[in-house]
Length: 294
Image (tube, rainbow, N blue to C red):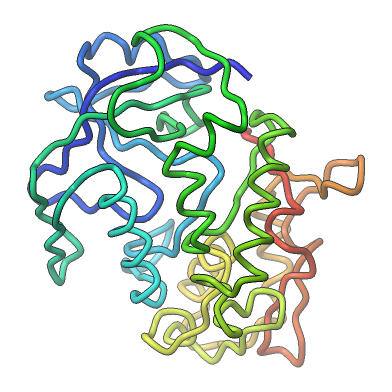
């Protein structure tokens, strides 16, 4: 697969809230943002900065508002570990995280590069993140193979089990399968979210209200499932029963396919099970799902 290489700096300005799957980036040539393909043009901040969304990974949420209700987060220990590991990997020597999730770093910026296949429907740049000197000139497309993928933050975070794989159809199958193998290695080694039954996405999380998925001892689940649950509970704060949750998931209309099946499916209710009205579990591992970008 060929991806556009953009050279620049990772910069964490005051009051920013980078998490485990986004990092602020400024190209050396801000006009390079115009080269990024996609259905929606990327619009940088006045200083040229864009929060780059890491390709194929999803970290626990440190701050998620959604369509309804106040901002919430998943259990913060693992969420912060992923966020801090990402910043440390790209080259920030120290990270000072405040209670409102804003951070200060030393140094304020570090050199690096991104490899992007394009923007998403929200106008975000989705990319592989690299550090130091890039392997080619900025503004050109280069082939991304497994060896180059291994040198990215995306691979690093998955290898440590600090993020979940979340695949979209535009990312090539060969690279998805490579990250799938690394995910399964991390799970077998019980790293990060996979450590000693920490993740309960497949085993089932008992939901008795929002604290069930936000408190320090709350359930650690796939972030995409957390986001849907959070929005559902915002709509029904006094009714923690999940009997209507499958209908909500059907209405959300996520389009995806299961890697072992040819047909596209619509709605996560097709891979989510509700048990006794209070427990929710997914019936497929996250690496088995490939989502549609649209």
